[in-house]
Amino acid sequence: MKFIKRLLCKIVVFFFASTIMAVVAYRFLPVWFTPLMGIRMLAQHSEGEPVKCKHKWVSISDMSEHLPRAVIASEDQRFMEHHGFDFDAIRQAAEHNKRGKKMRGGSTITQQTAKNVFLWPQRSWVRKGLESYFTVLIELMWPKERILEVYLNSIEMGQGIYGAEAVAREHFGKTAKELTRSECALIAATLPNPLKFNSATPSPYMQKRKGQILRQMRNIGQLTIDDSH
Image (tube, rainbow, N blue to C red; front, side, top):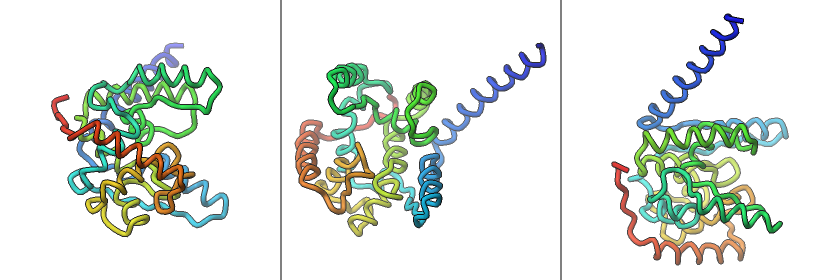
């Protein structure tokens, strides 16, 4: 019994130590590979498809200034104000889902970053619990600019495409820095389901969504990031 207790204590200590160290490390180091990339590559291989993983890390200063504003307008308009969880959005999503309409989530950019970088995509209570844990760590240890930088480099933006630089090159034939305001809004319009929506060949729905995001970007105004947040 004592052996089991000691083993459990060691496992708990290792878990907290390793996860905290990982979050601290990614505060400074590029995220070159994520669990989702590995999962998608294994799925492609098992289905006999060509394995595709387009990804290139670039700093946020090497992205269009419009892209952070576009994803905030699309995904998390209170990103600069909350500390990882937008409880109003969670409540609204719960009420929306109770009405039996198409399921909608209330995840913030920080929560999505925690999931993309450290966890797996399938929904479960275990994953949501770990996602909340990593969200708290990220908000405590990373400034908002770093959260956006990691998010924009790790988010899935198409079939086998991850991050701003990859989608800019694959879909628009340019660098992330060269993306226009309209192109950034179009990319942001795909993020609810980047495997369904394609920024290279936008549907009428995506064009409509792009227009909505462009208007919301004007409402957000100039994005200022306080590293002391």
